[in-house]
Image (cartoon, helix red, strand yellow):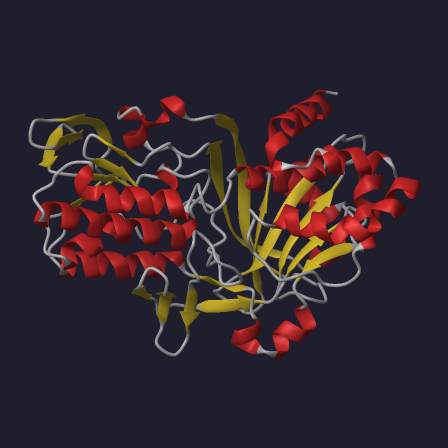
Length: 423
């Protein structure tokens, strides 16, 4: 997106790409459009099916996408008993509304990237594939990048190389970041899911015999076929247990797996500032976890335009791209406290199977629709407030856990998770 925008603006631009085919998606990915249900990264993006465009009305640009898409209408969190659930969004009501009622949709990321690359090349961008960047250093006139024993020089560099960004590491961006750890999951596309409300995103938890903490899985519809779905879970062994032995196994009795991939997720606090020595970081390289395809495209578009202004104003320095720096801070770390994402994932790890089954059974009506992982914990906590006197009487152990589920005490929460996991 950054290269496409820079090329359209008439800048001499090169993409240094490690892959030989950037549009070939080898990493496990849900390919969700994040998100339509709320303001996200200070934007209110959505997809216009008629014009085949992803719309970013706050920032004021669109992205062409004419590939497959499939709606989903709620986000359901299933308790370990496989019955109780927390529903974010009223599935039955939303599905009646069609596109207007969807929580969001899934799409083909390969098709999207293919289109962006095609537009970039059409606008004069040079693409160097198979380049493994090994060096980035400031020069008197800008920046020098080395890779595969070749050298590239430019006035600015945009570091768009993901969660484990080598550009960020080489330029010292990570020195002041808090590293929270890494995790890996496998993903599968499969058919044969038998569940009453299949057009929803599903997060589930189950406990293996003797386990002190649950295994989680996440399912969304696939954009490729109406009877196909995508799942993310920790290991193939966990997938086998889920589909053959767990309480949820009846969902998968006719399952057929089409494709298996994997991914690694590293989590660290956002960079204090996404600029250093004529290098701008965009997308995952600067943010906490994933900026999603939508956040990444926003960053690429904004960074390329900021560089265009800097070159037009003959300010090839921090002052020249201050618009991007301020926009990024407003749209990412100031808009959503990244620690809310950690809070969202911590609660199930703090609670026992009995506690989760009880808690999920309390919320029988659908809650407000959202796909925002930075918002979920707060939505659920607010919905539980009327039930707290009842919880105090029936399962007081949950009260203390709910009390520490606050963003300002997230370090304490993480220590509790570590303590439980070490038992």
